Length: 134
Image 1 (cartoon, one colour):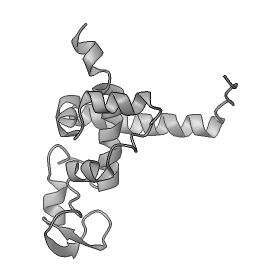
Image 2 (cartoon, rainbow, N blue to C red):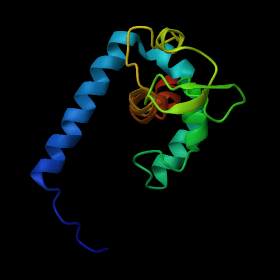
Image 3 (cartoon, rainbow, N blue to C red):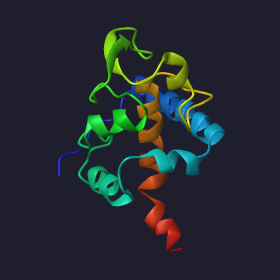
Image 4 (cartoon, helix red, strand yellow):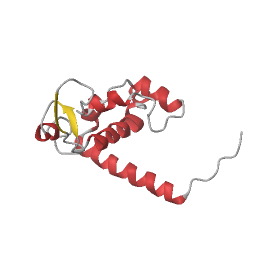
């Protein structure tokens, strides 16, 4: 097995910053509320992680987006997207998007919501089976 190169310090800091940001959000919103919003089973998440997919990018983006309220894939009407400001197919106004549970108090962009759900999936959902059997 080839020896792995050390992770650069800037990358360690970046990962720590990312973890701390999403961990604080997850704790504030509530892990159970966020776990309930994840569109994949613990087993699907575990398999992706075990296959080396640290960022869960092998799980369909469409499902992550739909789980956080970004419905660009659905039939609706053209409106300014509450996330990016571009013209998109949306089913609600920016105010309605911001009020979608469990994200009523933030984050208010689809990308941050997906990152938050992936954080919870990575650190809490995948490990749930082992914890539940303890």
